Length: 487
Ligand code: ADQ
Image 1 (spheres, protein in one colour):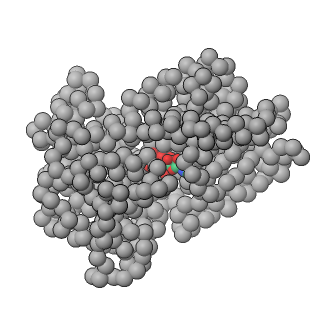
Image 2 (cartoon, helix red, strand yellow):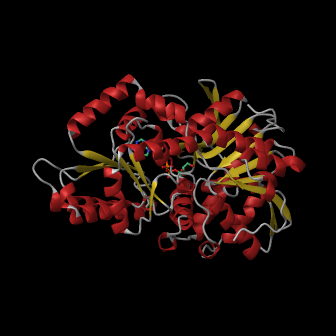
Image 3 (cartoon, helix red, strand yellow):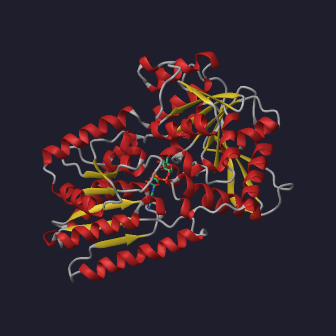
């Protein structure tokens, strides 16, 4: 770990992920777990169980496979208001630019604040003075404020995995100032992309009447650091998964089943931000306009059900299943089903094999913080005969993956054309695009994301601006420019 690192790393997220077994193979969990093990740190979060009361529930500290986790059960009503309510019915849609789906309920807001306060009370006694505390995502905006109110002096960092919305959209949230102001109790705030950072800075400058100078952001009498830290994947691990003997066997079996058909793959949680309806509509447009692809393409969408307790998700699921059924009833033949729809989670080795066996990946969110599926698909390809990534320009990943075929998911005809082009792209162009994408994946991988963030958080305050630039490899010309324009 970095020489700048002092003390332990303490990660805080809504859920503590599985630390062993199949579930732990998820990239983010692995990256955090490695860093937590190295520093003898802790991963703190909700246990996944509801019940009891805020007064009676106690944090459970466990050590599994060399990693310490600290988990807490949440009172059922508080959990519902905090997680299904404010986090996923209010913040998630709003931060994905869906004001129409966002619902603000003061009781849910209060439950969100209560759960953050409870997390802070239970976390504080576990902290040592030189710990680095890394808080993850929109469930926990006010955690630092709650910790500070209890006297915490540790370095506190926050990383937002989802997009930061434009000022006009954020302003529709009655509690917008409360939410953004809470970020000023952290020392470092990280975003996925420069665009997210710019939208945050725009809010600070115009709405909060604060100021931005390089990575220093001042508002409400406080100063924090803010920067973009694009998350990556563990490229080597995904390559190994995709080339393991079991995967190679699965790829052969899948290809034998497909015969001369090209498989298009989509892998997403069943979420309206992932653009699944528009994706189906683009595929339908292609089938309408290009009868020659009938029987030649097969679209496999893997979309495990998520947040099934939120009404918007249930409505959306029904719509999407109808759309898939409509396409199949319009175009299916005895020997060909145009759309195959799976709603179960798939073990990661199988996922890697499915990616490798697919000629095209269709990753078309209407808005996404980053999108790791795009990166996993590329890493799983055979460099000698790689598939093609069709990627939404509204995924954070598009900023780094310019060698993909970039599409506007709102334009069904253009997406259909890109899909056709992807399925017919000549080998030399496929190889060139894949090589270019792999260079980017290796340069900005998961370890770099983790180390850049934790080193920036650990760096002494007066050196932090320069260190951040070096870590993020920003050109020195922009260093400390007081009037750096962000618009
Ligand atoms: P998500 O919205 O969950 O993450 P994404 O980045 O695509 O979106 O990550 C999904 C992960 O789940 C991938 O690793 C994928 O392989 C896995 N997955 C999806 N479907 C699966 C299935 N059926 N079986 C097994 N695994 C499956 C949030 C933000 C993103 C951001 C990430 C990380 O919304 O924008 O990229 O956090 O910061």
